[in-house]
Image (cartoon, rainbow, N blue to C red; front, side):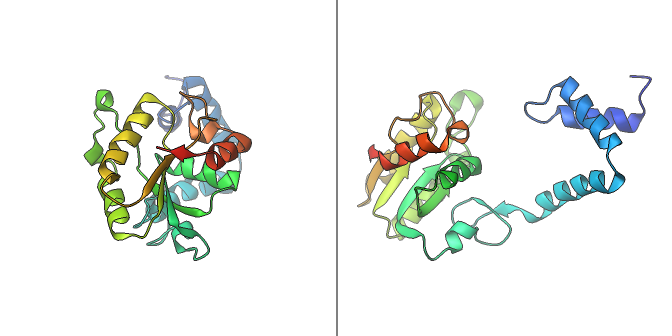
Length: 199
């Protein structure tokens, strides 16, 4: 792109690396950054820097946090007898927005997907087993996405937890197979959570 400066070309290239952003969208975002006031553009850059420097995984559940524990783990009003296992922090957020679950969470940070080279030891499964072993949980809800990989991950985990005196349930299938939790509406998530069943 000889007609563009190197800085513009570089920014377009960086935006194009984002998921769901094609070349045209990357160009539109770049031109937007060029059009807005300098303070607004730098506020975006500062927000990105702050996220990368301040956000980490909660030491208990692996949700996003800016301290040792996330807000959910610190909340003494949560039901500490129930643990909901999700694949990603965005799935946790979707369930929280449904407003029907008041227990704790465990975020796997992915799902078992051998074809993509993702094995159980790359997830937080060992930490989950240790939490169940040392905790007082009465129920573990498997809330992985209803996909082949999500179901396989749930089955693997339920086998590992089989030795503990804990009830293992899964979300009801109000969530369509092949869908992703973060895109389900609040009503579907509420129905799935309240209609969960033994795994």
